[in-house]
Length: 285
Image (cartoon, rainbow, N blue to C red; front, top):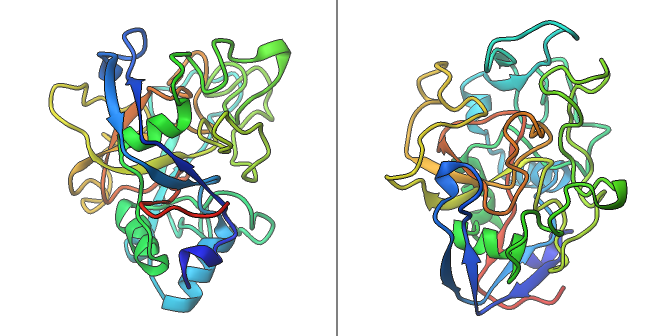
C-alpha cells in the first residue's frame, strides 16, 4: 500500500514562521517563541481503525499492547465517588487496538474512529508500510494553530456561541455532572476543521510526534505515564504527544490547546493515544 491509497487526504503547509508555545498554559509549554517551519504535508485526520486494520491484515503486525497482553484503559469511577488522582487508569488484559476496552470489546462499529492503544513503535511501523512519517512537534503545532496566537485552534473561546469544537470531556472530570459522561472517542471529522482544513487536531486522541521531550520541561504527565505497570510500557525515551484527548476537561488536564504537550514513554499505549501521518512530498488533497 502507498500513502496515496489511504482514505485520508493531505494538506500541504509551510514554509513559514510562527509563534510556538505559550506563556500562559502549563509550565512545560513555556516560553512562547518564534519558530521556522519547512514545507510538509499532513493528513487531515488521525489514522483510523479501518486504515490500521488494513495494515495489520497485510503485514500480520502485532502491536506492543498485543505482545504485552494488555494496555492502559480509562474507567470512570462511580458517579459521585471521590477518586484519587490517576485511579481511573487500569492495565487491562487483552486491551489493544481492536479491543479498546479489553478482550471482550470490539471496534466493529467504530471503523472511522481513530485507532488507539498505539505505541510509538506501532505508529512508525505503519508509516514505514505506507511510505510516510510522523510529524515532529514543531510541524504538529503549526498545523494546529498556523500563524495565530489564540488559546485554541479556533480562537480564544472554548465553546464559541455554545458550540462544541472538539471532542473533550464535558463537566467535572472524572465523573462529570451526569453518569453517562464517561468519555469516548468519536469518528474522525465529526467536529469542525481548523483553518488549515484539518480535523481533530484538538481532542479525541493524543497524537505521537517524533520529538523527544527535552530536559528543562516538566516531567509530570496528567494522563498516567508515570503509573507503574508493565516494565515495557514504561520503557524507552520520553516523547512528545500533542492535541489532548476526549479526557481533557476544564477542571483537569485542560490540554485541548495547540501549545499543550505531554511526555510519554515510547513503548506506552493507552485508550486515548493514536497518531496522524505526515510527509515531505507535496500531495494532492
